[in-house]
Image (tube, rainbow, N blue to C red; front, side, top):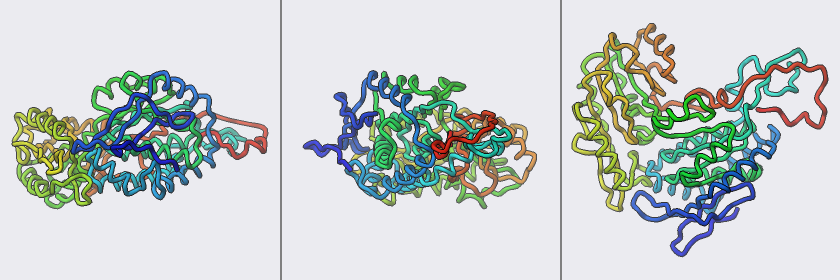
Length: 477
């Protein structure tokens, strides 16, 4: 497989991957690791290139279903076992940790999850399909009339996040369903989507089936305009901008933990600490708020003691567990935290959370603050490191302070409360007992099924058999 060109300074050259192969854009930006060392140059394509690429995706026909699934399985092996764009799996993952600041152990878990998603693509693509629908109009059920699971469109655009490699496992489901994919990588971490798209092409997906389009902000919206459906990661402003449109926004998780009076938090401290700090606290499924029926101060003290013991190490160190940032970025996050924390009681991190690394960059150490009431505004503040707000909860407060949670882990024996939590539409997932907020596995929805967004049912009834030469193509999944 072709290696990237190297400059005299040994910078990795990352080109766009267009419908006619790699494209060396003139406009290039230098990428640095968290210590400030230059490591790569990323080519940014102009708007005209984006427009022509999106048109090419629309003209392309998807591979037959069986071929898509086989190609995804081959791509998993290539992604994991081969040298791709000049990097083997070990060197690639070390590079991701260095540049993104995500601890190496987290990168290992996330990239292995991408491999697993590609290997299980057939199973994952089938999970959202209604029980009353079949995958293909050729299914015998359509003889008597049946719902058929079909795509809503043909081209799916992804504005990728750069804080974690894991989300790149999600859009593989769309590829399995027959969508052509355009990925705009984050400048913070373009290495994972570049490796994945390269592996998919080597596995049998054509250059007009999946593309990588690094762009500046001016051309970024052109990718979404040229697609039938899109996926965008960002903050609250992104959620507000795209809510209810053909673009699915993925915003802050604001995952929470609730401990009611009939449960003793001491029995669940490991799960609570793990929910806050696992994956370096950078994921939307890390707990950012813990509410306790009763006095929250003892739990805040216990969390502060446990989290204070986490070591500050460079992100590429195998023992690293906390995220790193360039020093200026870390200082900006620290200043924002201290400003937002006014009116709370600091149990950890009240004087700051930045610890500079000897080789450059800085680690964001954990913070624990106690809220005066369950609906304090700080409970909605989510930051990319182990930062938790601990507050009181009362029966009178009810479900309201728990709303807008991607995951809610509840330690409670109150079945009526559980019913209310499940009925609350802004709580996406409810875990009962010792299941950390970051728990997830292939085959269960993260924030609903992606297939619910990309697919629909159509009724088909037929009175003839399909032609033999089309029997292997499949319709959608």
